[in-house]
Image (tube, rainbow, N blue to C red; front, side):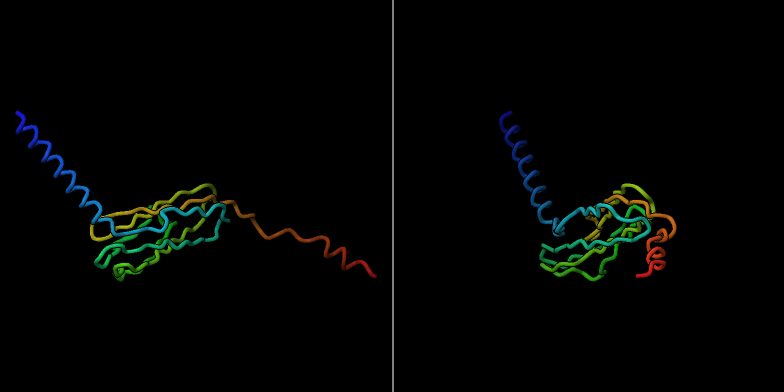
Length: 146
């Protein structure tokens, strides 16, 4: 009975030790930040933000895909592998067409099967319709003589 219990405990320890080593070795993509708040932005004006990523591994890092949850968000990135220790930029654009708050996830797929997520958020305020009203003071100044 004691041998079985000890053997079971040893197997569990080896299992968890192997799982910890595997997780540490696979996390080679370091994000300077995972979220950006645009705060208040005007409707109809696209905004952009650059997320910085670093390859902390010992081999080149390949970004397989970077995609957004909708067509209003557009990520741009280099298809070239990122050398060990090097940094790269993922440029994320958002077309502020709809009024109100927004939160948009962007998923990074790298090294064939690993993923990380970026978030952009903010609030879109409605732009005024039409042009600015005429300035009546200008006409008044033109009529006065000094």
